Amino acid sequence: EIVMTQSPATLSVSPGERATLSCRASQSVSSNLAWYHQKPGQAPRLLIYGASTRATGIPARFSGSGSGTEFTLTISSLQPEDFAVYYCQHYKSWPLTFGGGTKVEIK
Amino acid sequence: EVQLVESGGGLVQPGGSLRLSCAASGFTFSSYAMTWVRQAPGKGLEWVSSISGGGDIIYYADSVKGRFTISRDNSKNTLYLQVNSLRTEDTAIYYCAKGQCTGGVCPLFDYWGQGTLVTVSS
Image 1 (spheres, rainbow over the protein chains, first blue to last red):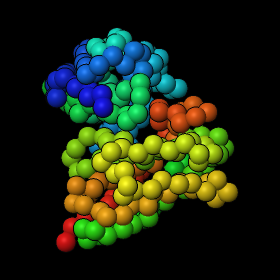
Image 2 (tube, rainbow over the protein chains, first blue to last red):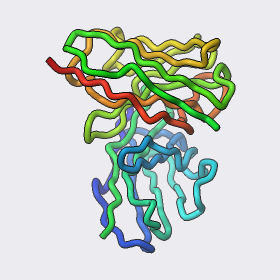
Image 3 (cartoon, each protein chain N blue to C red):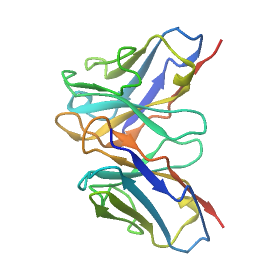
Image 4 (cartoon, rainbow over the protein chains, first blue to last red):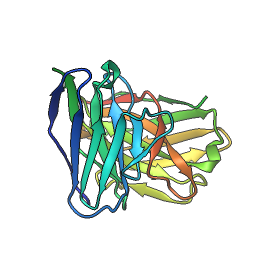
C-alpha cells in the first residue's frame, strides 16, 4: 500500500495570500495524483488530477505540480470559499489511498 | 445534472449488517465505475471499494475485504454496499462517488453524494 503524507496539518493564511500545500508518496506514483477539497458538512470536490490538470470548473488560482513522490498544490490568492480541508489521493495502483489532509484556515 | 443520493445508514450493533444504496441520475450510469469512500467522524477519507460500469471488475480495501460487498443494478441506476460483521471502527459517513472517466475502474471521482452515516455501537 502506498502511504500518502500531507503537510502541514494546518495552514493559517490571510485572504488574498498564497497557500502552498505538500503531499508526499511513500513510493513513486508518477503523475497519478489528485487533489480534492472538502468544506465543512459537504462532500469532497475534485480539484486537480494528473498532478497538474484542473478539473472541470476549477478556477485558475488552483495549480498542481510535481511527479514521482513529491507534489504541491498552490492556491495563488485565497478566496473566502477556499478555506477547507485539502486531500491528495494517488491512483497509481490499488488500493487507492488518501493523505491525512491539510486544513486551510483563516489567519 | 448529476445527482447521487445515498441511503440505508443507521445505528447498528457490532456484528450487525446494513445495505447501503446510492441512487444515481443525470448520467449514463452503466458507463461509469462507481466507488464507496468513507470518513470516520472528524477524520480523513478512506477508499472502501470500487466497481466497473459493467460490474465485472471489483476492488476492495483490505480493511473491508470479506465483510463488505459492492454491487450495482444498472437497470435501476443504483449502487449498493452490503456491509456485514460491522465493527466499531466502521463507524463513518459513507459516500458514493462517480468515476470521472469511462472504461475500466476509474480511480478519480468527479461527483460525490452527501453521504449516509453508519454508526456501529452497542
